[in-house]
Structure formats: structure tokens, C-alpha cells
Length: 336
Image (tube, rainbow, N blue to C red; front, top):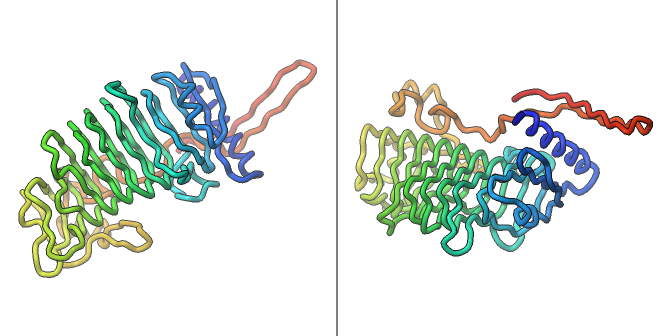
């Protein structure tokens, strides 16, 4: 039944995308409640869809661009149609800058039990402000800051995302950032009641005061790369890092089975954040994580990818029989 419901949502988004191909690529929004699509909204009406939603609902976004200030203040899921193509709104779900970044959090002391955000590109980042028990962000591309600045985040999982900046300066009981490409990671320098782990991540730069554990990861530099050190609040486990300019930027950290090299380890070509060594080269050098797999985004159970594992609609058609007053819909689907 869930597959059928999801297929219906896919059909609606595919239909919307056919319309987009003939217009200005403005996206469409679909609200699902108890397995039924109960509302459709324009690309500038995500806030209205959230207002109409109740806890447990899912909001689907088609490909196209969305220009709307909105705040997720309910325990809902916001599911896009992919972030792999970045700002190409014909091929991705593109949240365009509209004066302020989207936010997650309810007013006052209300605690959101669960919020999921998946498969979208945000040109303006995302800010977590309120109290949340479970936050899941998956396969998104944030072309600005992803900030977890909440004073109560019980559990957060950031999975296979591309992040220009990630700030974990809130009070976080348990945050796991895994298999992500990261330009800058910073935060938690003054927090004592926080736990943050970066697992199998490629990180171009870490700020000096970052309090976190880095496992099976690759780090290119600390601060601006000139006589700056990662502090003693950081722990490195099976992590490869760049020992640059004749000093060790990690000498103040606690370490277990780590490696340093004088070579640049994370490329900044076109912002791709790829390791300068191939998987085979890292394997040959023995740069392996605690699980025996290669360090970096290609390791672990779920290697980095922004591709959504959802059915792809190859073709669809609808026939209307005015005599019998019936509509027949044919959909050709391939599983990814």
C-alpha cells in the first residue's frame, strides 16, 4: 500500500514536471495525509502546505524552483525530487534565496518529535532553531549554512549531504554527520552538553574551536591553514589529514590510528571536495577506517551519493472516456 501511495505521489510530481517543461520551471507542492494527497500548492506556497499539515504528514516537492520563506514548525517530512543537479531547476528541487533561510522549529517550549528533510537543493541554507527530538536530513545540497543552533536537539542525523558550511553550535545530545562533502565545519566551542561525530566525511576546513569526533574521515586544513590548531576538544580516529606548512595542526587533539601527509588531501576544484587520492590509492596506502573500508565518503555502509533511491517515471499518459466517465492512467516505472 505504501508503494502505491508513493507511486501516486510520483505520478503527481511527474505531471507537474511535464507542466514545468512548458513554463518557467516553478515547482509544485503536494500534501499527503494518511496516504492521500489532500492538497496541491504553488512553488511559492510551501508555507501554506505546512500550515495545512498536521504531525505525521509528508510534503512532496516536484523538480523546479521554489521561492518562499517558510518554517517547519510541525513533526512532518519535506521530500524533494533530488539535489544532484544543484541550481538546475529543471532537474532538481531548488529552494531559491528569498531574503531569509528556511527554518525548523516550533514556538516556545514545544518539542518536535521528528522532522525529515530529503532530496532538495537550498541556495539559502537551513537553520534549526527550536527543540527537536529526532532530526533527519538526507541527500540534500546546502549552498550556504546548515546550522543546528537549537538549544535542544536530542538526535540528529545528516546523511550523504553536500554542505558548504555546517555549524553545530547548539546543545546537541547526539549528532552524526556521515558520508558528507563539507567545505567548512565549525561550532560547539563553548558547549559542554554536546556530542557530534563526523563519520566518513571529506572536510576541506575545520574551525579551530570545533568540538567533535572525526572517524574514518579526511581533513584538509584547520582554520586558514597558517599556524592554526584544532583544539583539545576534538578526537580523531582512523582519520587522514593534511600536515601543512611544516607543523601539525592536530597535535593538540586526541588521536587513534591516524595518518598525516604533506600533500593536499581534499581538492577544491569546482567545489567538488573530492579526495586527491583514488580509492585504490588509499587502500594501497592502508588508509582504512575502523570497519576496514577506505576512509572518506566512499567508505562505510552507504557511500556518498545525492541520487534518490526512488522509482523513476519513464513515461505516463492519461485517457479520458467521456461516455463512461472514466480516467485511465498508464505509468511506466523503473526502480533505481
